[in-house]
Image (cartoon, rainbow, N blue to C red):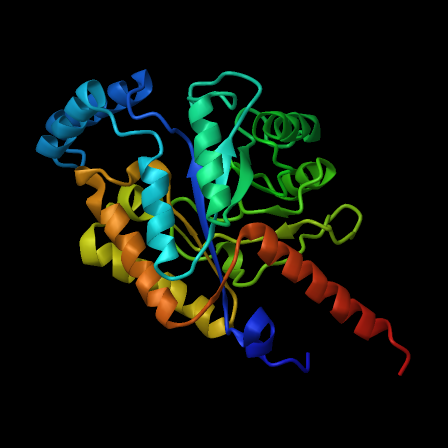
Length: 316
Ligand SMILES: [Zn+2]
């Protein structure tokens, strides 16, 4: 390709930045949150799970007696990102069937509508956090898209499956058939850096037919849970490990994709999670990325592919 790596992103920027948040829960005072926190305290005491008992107890008290206002974490995230002129994508969890790990809020609850308004006002995107019970069924993805359309008035273009559930091309084929423009699921939950070394957005190929899908895959670089839960890092170690995963993508002129969950903000026990996000954004901002929503990045990648295709088919 004759293009230099620095020319593949808009505005002459040398790499892309995709900030994202999976909304697994929105209510602080919620039975599962109470039980999970109580269990966490028990595991710290009995099984040596990492954590801080005093701070976890403080959280339990807060949940029970003075829960965080529902919008607070979203306001914090948007404020942190706005410091750098960044915008992000929020994936709203939906599944038609109840499951233990499924959504803990209804799409129709008025709080979610207020959150969606905040996101939209800030120029953010709303996508679907789906694939909870079945992640290879186009009909269920369609059902979720329709539910988000009815509840929030959005025509979602992007999806990330809950718990990064993914089984290869059949997941992408089902998502494409349901009308999604891009998928943000492709990544590791137990280690850092892009899956299969994929530093750039890409179009998956159906191995059965050899067809290149229209769906764009945006590979994940770093997720908060990977750093702090699976790898049990904290403070500066987490920041440096995340940065070590990010730097090669910047060097390759690819897309850096971060996933930070909303429910770990504004919580003393998880202050490292928030601080690491803030520090990563500061470092990234200095490197001057093209930061856009997932839909904007996918649209750019599609347009770019069309231009490259038409050049290839031009008579010489
Ligand atoms: Zn999730």
